[in-house]
Length: 105
Length: 257
Image (cartoon, rainbow over all chains, first blue to last red; front, side, top):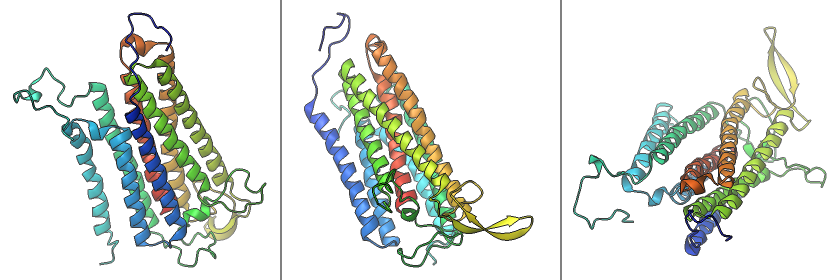
């Protein structure tokens, strides 16, 4: 680094482990997307394939939120105050599935 | 993960004087804004599912699939174009273009997180470098989306027949491409939802690029260096990752399922 004005804070060295982990997470996201493509073309459409897609999507969402957005390393109360309200979305989906008789019961 | 220190004697962290969630006001508010935005996008995707399953599904084999107003289209038959593919003799490249868009957005998310990491180390040069890549990724994604919309609106030139209500009578008309009234791919709500959901997401990407540019500009002018921290990069970074997160869901529910 070139010299900066003296009052400014010093540049700290790169944490190689941390950066390596970020690229690893990016690799996971890429691989999971590739697996999704595999299922899209290698498997007939149906409930099973849809469930696989949703599960893989949730895995990707977990990595983005926990690692990229750093929520997995925040204070517990912050983490839960973001994660728990998502229950309302699940409630909406469940209510619509039941009320819409989507499972043909 | 035990991130909270329990060495000191137990003191109520909620009585003031300390940030109980160990995050600044701005960062907390960004999180709660993103939570509310997650509700908006969830409603849109839930509405997509609801409307999609209120239409009949296509029941034949994939090979004999044709566009019709009578059933919901198979996404991989709708989104099968890639710029310049006819020039090199390829007739169909299903989902390849969205795959590329997904890759671009994930990569720009990685460069954003590297910019945040550099900011935490007060490394101005690297913040500039990674923000530059993030902005470039955002622009590329928007350009891809513009091409995809254009192709979706104009159609493949073959078209399909739809029943249209003209002066109180149903007439057969050949439809090319799509608009909010009618489209060649399937029932009208298919194109409406496409425009609304990918449009709402694209608008978020656009806002994100604008914010990213602002952060880049302020980094270059040394504003954060003078301020003594790069927390703004982190906050805008949260927004940018959220845009990526939404795309992951849009990709699954609009293009894959």
